[in-house]
Image 1 (tube, rainbow, N blue to C red):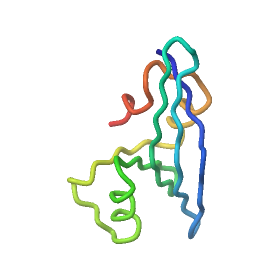
Image 2: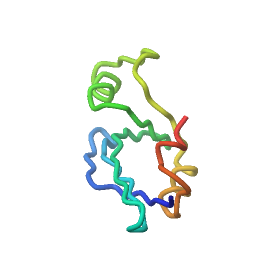
Image 3: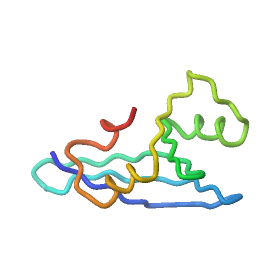
Length: 94
């Protein structure tokens, strides 16, 4: 399955960005859709499993390891954003 990603909503606050990323299949024979919440600051994207984890991280400074999140440099993210992804975007998050 091949997918693409696009931003479907963004809010900027204090020169940092919170947004929703939409991952969707590019062929009709394998329908797929998913969304991911992210935070962007100083060249790094942080992706979260839930909105609550994002809120804890951004607004309360809760950086505990049990808040599942993945980090990606802007340069790597741009490659995914501009191209076709083999599989789901979430499979490429570490």
